[in-house]
Length: 322
Ligand SMILES: Nc1ncnc2c1ncn2[C@@H]1O[C@H](COP(=O)(O)OP(=O)(O)OP(=O)(O)O)[C@@H](O)[C@H]1O
Ligand SMILES: N[C@@H](CCO)C(=O)O
Image 1 (cartoon, rainbow, N blue to C red):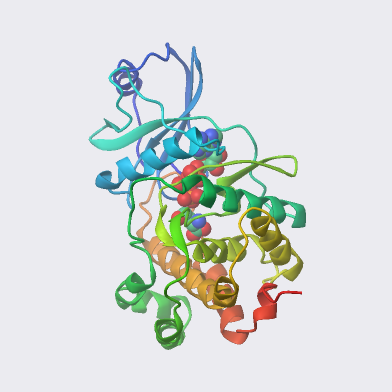
Image 2: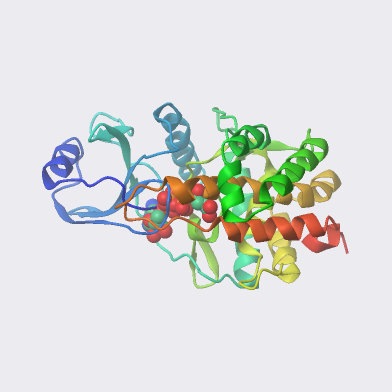
């Protein structure tokens, strides 16, 4: 997260007046992340996170996101969960912006995940898919494949500025993905942003998941593909097949994949890399001056795209069955 919106003491007190959480003890902005404004709040009754929803979260989607977090917590999935005010409301507002208080989730994210973390993260993702089964709401993936070409049409100039010649290469990616994108894979609720900074550990053991604000209805294997890109590339840009195999093994210990899902993972990972390249490219220029936020590097995802272009080999992703 990040801090785009400042909150005054009076605004905090007005918000907290609706809750039974006691008086605030401390309140500070959290610099990590890029999407929403986040604050760590300590009151007489414990620690909470206040999230003020900024750019990409639409207030009409909040019942889905917050309802999902509550559902998952009620189904024994370790995740941040919304805190209701005295009237039972979880969607609140501050400074004219939507916000929510969620429980503080203990644990630490890891900056450089090892193979053991990848295995546990895979397990945690499959448990999320399983725990969400039966959640009665759905939400289309508004950053899914159909959105990428129109999004890129507005970003071509920026792509060329970033790297001359890139616009044509991305157009070729879009054509390849349109022709090869799988349909009919098992689907349900997916996290869609299952990055190391959104997964907490106690040591090497999975401790829980935060940040459900891209969650939507899509193929489960797409969620795995997002995670493989985010967890299994080394700092030098190479893909760590051992980490990928561990992630898939952790996942399959809970929810075995069909052959069709495994076969689809390389193209899904190619598409998932494009999705994060596009949002990063957009944010690179659009981040407001003065916000406490460091935009993420689009070139990191351009390098991942290059790996996917170069090898459509199933083994690359450790997806071949032994
Ligand atoms: N429920 C929570 N419990 C404990 N810490 C939290 C919680 N929610 C957020 N945080 C802290 O705030 C930071 C930013 O949160 P989060 O990742 O949700 O923000 P974001 O802007 O949506 O980020 P991004 O989308 O870039 O991952 C986390 O890295 C973590 O340190
Ligand atoms: N996880 C995203 C940021 C949150 O949307 C990224 O790394 O680009």
